[in-house]
Length: 427
Image (cartoon, rainbow, N blue to C red; front, side, top):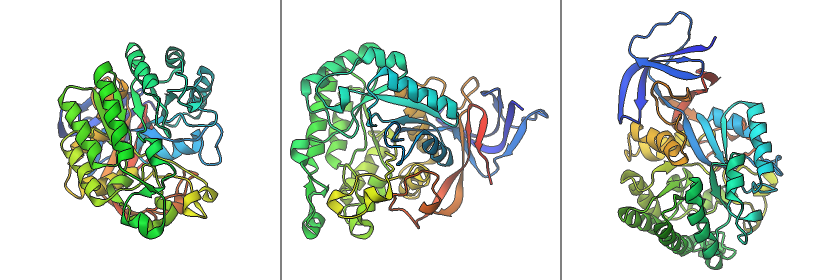
């Protein structure tokens, strides 16, 4: 059966900035009708009464670890986690082993993703060869192979001339650049936010200025080159201020924030220990307030989880030796709901813009991110009133490194539809 009918839901239309009570008819992987009272005897029916029905969520920052670290995550387990989390599309970062810096690696991964066939997998290619920050990759060849963005995520591009040339070059290929901002000279071997907690625990500190100073540099480069630049996992109040000012000057820059940087502060490390060790580190409450205000004002236009799965061994032992990162892909949506919807920061329509419409626009995915006829039938159905307890031992991701175990969260995806196929069904 190629037809699917979603009935009785509240339909989110981010492209029109409104919601309607309507049904959605899908035929052969494409949305063909959106209006109340649709009936089709040949269609499989999903009853979405009491639920929100919107374009599929798109996560522009995930680590699926393949190739090279499949014991942490692979394309299959990562895709399953995405589906369970309500995501229909993901953008994988390039810091694998080997890195995604050649057409051969890109071709292999895209072939694997098609073979698995669960979720739309898109790839970010490395900015520099080997992620070493010394020589620029061949952007044209990487795009031809299927990469849709560029990043050295996990590392900052310290070479200003290399980044300037890349920004200039990237415009001709319409490739957005996603930047991990951290001045390594300032950050050094820093593990946690600079402040009382670091001093009290004797942990090496990673000052906010390590992020702020590099963002300031790269905003100037973006202004000069007019490149499409995106700053990922913002963590400081100053970063928000800097980006907002340059946006006001017409610079084409955007940014995202993770759920953990909205819900946890540096004091959380006292409770969660190694599980709350991330990069950039958890900051303080003033930064959390600034990040939420940045979302409200439209400075931060995208939500991205930075799903970073690790093995148990990676996160155990001495704090200074433990790996950075949180596995969160299948709980990111209710975590964001807790941080933003429950606190009244935004409404569900804006929520969908941040998790679907804006990411699609940023990545140039013209058939995704909107709910209208002719678009790909990538759809997330969410029950805003559903409560569940986070149970890390039930994750389908290989990564169980998560500080949110036991949290009671509200607003979970209940169905995930990719290209017209039901990948997760309402229970």
